Image (cartoon, rainbow, N blue to C red; front, side, top):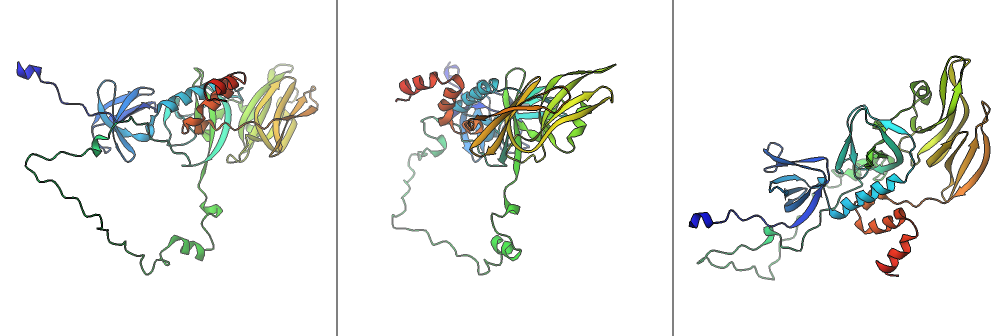
Length: 392
């Protein structure tokens, strides 16, 4: 009876809580790749944090399974809420064209290779292209999940056994020895010295961190996330895509139908980018009209050397796009397509330089979450929230 009344082993107290950020997480019994797997957790599940060792975290699932995982695969509650704001914001953006992939592609929470990937785009899946961004590789770092106001069990003082002497603390005036000095040949073995001999300096273009180009996409079910720009392929017909000539197609739109004697073809407007690391969405705009007599596409409009930004719109026979004339002056140029002639410019309308919402940073900086919610839900709600929630 006494044995039946005894409780099981006491659970390790949790020092925090988080949510699974990746599509799935594999839990291992101990640190190390060869450690046996004890279970898996799916995206969005709430877990408890038990221990943190550098970039690894021991967690406990709702089913009571405990194991180790990479800390960068976890999200805080504010980060999960920010993903919802990103999804709401992405739903308001117009599509710049449909794209697909040739192999499974991870959808990330922020434009960073090490950020949690909460979904996968499989070959044959179609996503809508919304925005594009160029960031430095490794420039983003996800924060640690929030911790509860409890004492870390690893930092608790262990009580000595009965009869053991109490350890005597070290004297306050006892100082550690000074650190050793640099070696005598420190200049000869320094990295800056070798750069100076080769004519380079720290911070030169050859030493700048590499950059990655990312695209914000929206899945058919409304999920929104960041994917690698170079791994997306716009669904433009092959007989039109062959005119890209080394440039990457960033957006495309149908521009009506051209009827020939024995065929009917779609006319197209597209935007392309030659340098994928350029901080713009496109540098060229081109309109293709199908010539039924010659059975080929012909360009009736082609403007190059632009600093273009999304969104581009096309309502045949009109189309418009935004170009950056100066860093503080953006204009929307509107054209009308008149048959097979060169499109006619209807006018240039100044547009306000859009607020850089830095949605990728919201996942790392929850303090900006409410400000973005005000912008997403509309201007009428913003002053009310500031008045009653954040104060005047």
